[in-house]
Length: 247
Picture 1 (spheres, helix red, strand yellow):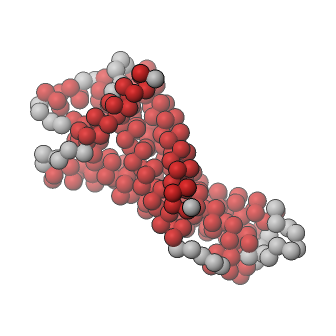
Picture 2 (cartoon, helix red, strand yellow):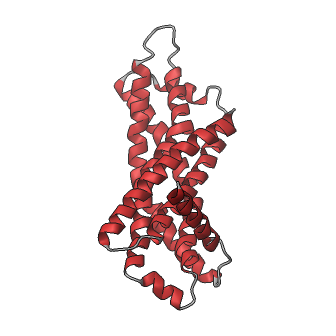
Picture 3 (cartoon, one colour):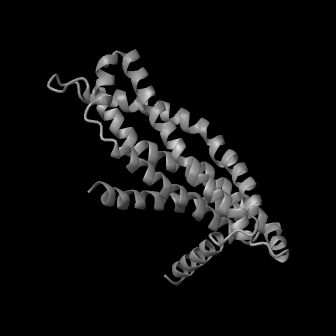
């Protein structure tokens, strides 16, 4: 328990340093643009591929579980739409990004720590926590919602293609199901969750990398902890946010 409270205190102390006012905003702007490419744009591919196939699987599973004639065919499109918007494109995508982006952040900062690059920044009077972590935090908070929007569209497209090509639903019924009783707030709900998850992934992973000591073995362990802790917190906050935003 004492170790947990100590780690929690170190986490909030690090956040205070990260969120302090930048000394030279121009440098932070350039670094943020680089992080948007490295952490955001480079993640478009994996999100697109996984969203497409997940949308296809959701559609097929919904179709095969609603074969009873009393169920209207448009329920397949409706189920695909709501499953992707409410859960997959925010939560499941965040878990995937925790593995890709989180491990990258932890290993990058951890390597800088064990090779004493962070110590060199501190000696030069640079706020190393803010310089290294704040651009990553801003980049993920700005770009991850775009990844969520891409995931929603690609997932629904994958569902439509798989459903029509497999012959389990007509294109007209699927499109009608997508449009039926649509609640725009669901998009807002998904994007709000994405912002929380982006903050969790970046801050937790950076914390694990920033306070690692030892060598390459410890850096690997820190990357593993970053993914595990981020995933657990994402699932925890998913429950909390769902209760707060949809109740």
